[in-house]
Length: 210
Image (cartoon, rainbow, N blue to C red; front, top):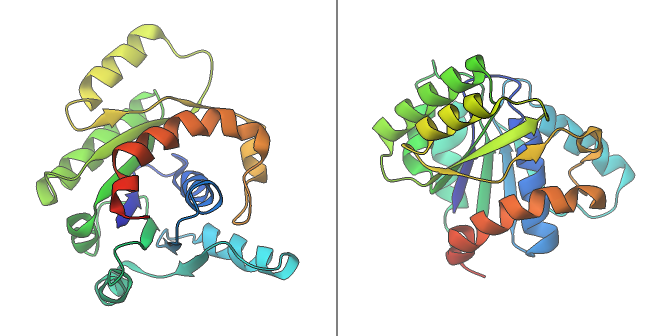
């Protein structure tokens, strides 16, 4: 199964969401996961290499790769139906290398926030994605949400996004997310992330094998 996590806007929280999902799948659901860091900054791959020095056995592997490497890598990775591959995408849409990634995706998670820039980027990402892979399930994840979001803004954004996919429970803005690593998610965050990931897992990911 191929899960991609993306949005055109940088700073939407793609990399942190990728870590949280990978930790949830490996530590809670005991699934086999590989993370491919295709973001231009490759912060996940750097964090993974640093963590390996301090920890013993890694729960999953993080591979730094460019979009041009995807077709060959995915040919190898998709041979096992039980294997879950998560890709942290670049925060841009102007690369033709995204097309085969979009086309191959089995599930898409799109983090966003309730502001105009994030909303415009999320809509553009969704339109391009659906032109390439119209039937792929999409989950929009309200991410780093603060308590001062206007109800009218939230309602309008959600009304537009449900045309393209599903909305999850929000992930509130907490400083504890900065302590998330490729080895663990702080336990204090579990009540926040479990409503998001359990729903996605039960409806889509859990069907891919055990």
